Length: 77
Image (tube, rainbow, N blue to C red):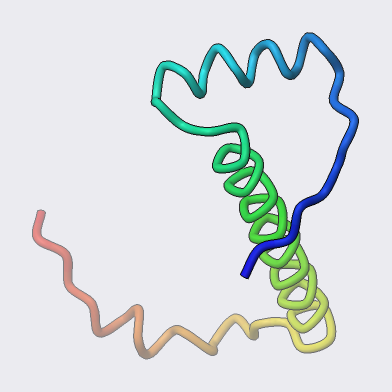
């Protein structure tokens, strides 16, 4: 289900959107939908990265933690 919303967009931005979307045969609604979905995805990814960084700050990786795994790998020369 979708809901209609009204937004204000800078004229030059809208002109650029219209130019690009026509080249792809997309509607304004589709382009705005994709832009909002990407915005949400980018914010969620940024939040996940921030939480991971905080976790590593609380519990940093020890120097010997990956030694056994990395030592077992043999790369061809």
